[in-house]
Structure formats: C-alpha cells, structure tokens
Length: 140
Image 1 (cartoon, rainbow, N blue to C red):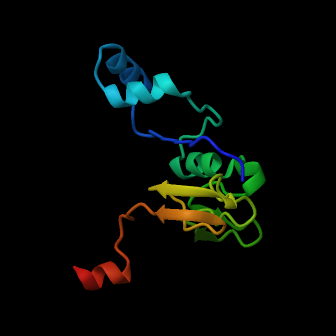
Image 2: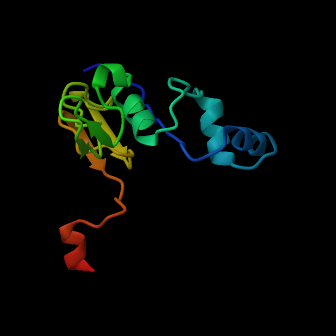
Image 3: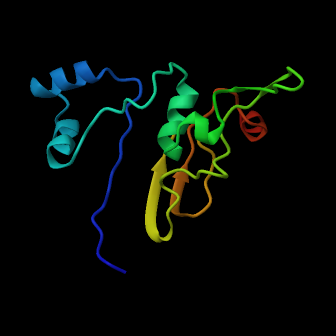
C-alpha cells in the first residue's frame, strides 16, 4: 500500500462563511484558521435548494437529485398521488464519498442524514436524531 496523506473534511453547514472569515482574519478561531492555512478550503454552491436534506445528500453522494432521485423527506408517487415519508437517502446506488473500501482507513463523525455505510474501513459515528430510538427510550 502506498503512503497516503491524511485528509480531514469538516462541513460547517450552520455557520456563516462571512463571519468565520472575518473572525479568522481578526485572530479568532485559531485552530480553524490553522487548518485553513495548511490545507484547502472552499464553499460549496452546487444547488440553489433550501432543502437541507437535499443539500447534504448531494454533498455526501456526490450526485444531484436528478441522479439519486432523492428530492427530500417526502416522496411523491406520481401514479397514485400518495405521499410517503422518506427521511434519508439510502445511498445504495450512490454511496457516500467516504465508503472507500478496505484500502483506506476512515473515521466519520456526525455526517448529517447519513446511515451507517457499507465498505467503510473504520469508525462511523452517526448524528443523534431528534426522535429517540427504542433503545434510547429504554435507557432514559
């Protein structure tokens, strides 16, 4: 196996880029500023949608909704006109970008709206959902 440089990807979806840049230039947020100086940063502008689930799915899978078929949490059946809750994309056809197989060791922490992914050699920690699972109800 070749020697690989580690990659750290941090997504700040609820932060104002304008404020972050201002505070970093003023000497605040030193750790974030250091990461920015030693690596690469950028803003993602791949969809005009205000739908959070759609944006995160596009980021994680690397495909737009026209490819994944995932437009949001409500799935519309055009034949029956019925609505069905579809909380997250299943990532079956287009896996998340970090599902790289055995050749890469990966640590994934709190990727919004993503289930556990197959082909991940490493640790996956899911975000806490707003509604507790049956196990959490028993523990509380």
